[in-house]
Length: 615
Image (cartoon, rainbow, N blue to C red; front, top):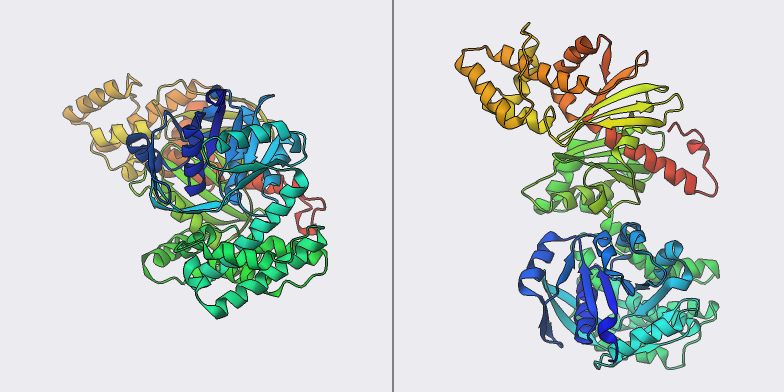
């Protein structure tokens, strides 16, 4: 196509839809950048390209492969396509705000009713297109999509008809390579969205519940009768929305579905693999609009509730085998109080805070009163690359998470929460929940030291961080204690039995290790070495400014595992320095509180039980 090579397109989400679209757009001569959070998938794509097989066969290599949406901001894109699950979109949109220029257009390439509204709520209807996909596939490997079918054409349209030219330009690109895509107006777009969703709703949930491929479902007469009734419910609701289908629509739907072949719909794949599903935007939307117009949608309601029940924690936590046992262990280990079953938390509003630290990722869930009900710790650099997924899956299976917040070093590359906050603000919120008013907060983490000044209104007034060197942090302690052959869990109790008053001369980890070895060779007692290390850290903190005459509190993983350090710091500053309860989880706790605050703010009417928000 003429000038196609000048069109710059980004694609977020590399499932079958995203991979197939990426290959076709590059084939058309566009400059294509692709983005996904799965590091292993990206590694395979960089090494071996994107492979399509079965009804389409090709291998395509991409120069621009990213793990963060924000990394696409230097490309000056014409279009950014979201081919994610609906529940993953909010996090990606937050990152995409950095890309929002005057010319960029955002495209929803997602199934379901109203999914484009997730995008237009941030970028506006005039900048949002909706692409209706009429092809499908399954992932055969991380970089390989098995293309099951393509029933042309695809459809694209501007949701408010202000960007018809941009929609037509996009359609022309795909048409030029014999991948038929038709530009339509907003009225026709709504009709096609309902048409596609009715088709998805008719089979997706049924295949997931029954563990059937589309071909297997369509081969059974009794099942086909059920499918036809689900379609008719959707038609009845659509007509109330002023959407009319031709008299032979049901027959054409059944013909379309018979072409699906030996293929599991995406929702069915998610349900079978115990992942969150998009049922709320499929059968759930038909039920929602049915209630609006007082139209009965019994079968759609039944399948909506069945899918939700099968992803509910009562099913997930009773799953046999390794995965079910893992879920039970995570929830059992993290529950703060054992006097309530997880059924209680599934029925009541909860809020999640995640602190993605350099050494450990901390999870805290609070109830609507702000009381912690779950705490969990996960090593950030975990050998199990699915560990984070397992924890989040367990959390969402057992708790009714209304809103969530991420913080810490890894927050910018994490899209599984509704909001992101700095650890400075989360620390202030976490400490202020129980200790209001002006205060100093000392946070010693794995790679840095922070001092936060909080004013009388519980807001951050100022903060200071140590220089780029990691001296005095958790990583420094771990390396030095190892060189001194001191078990790090014994350091605090050893130091408490010493009156030694000498510090390390060097804050550099390399030189400090040498100095520690000299202490060992000189026959210095282990308790004196431990206290000497703590004195060195205290002197590092002492170079940072604490406001006088106000309370000072310590948080972070270091102080949780090295409580004697607060005693030495109190001596150094000649003031009482208190340690917060559960200091390693304080920042994650603050993130959960801010998630609750944000959720309350977004409600049109605040329920009575949320009337007092302390943060």
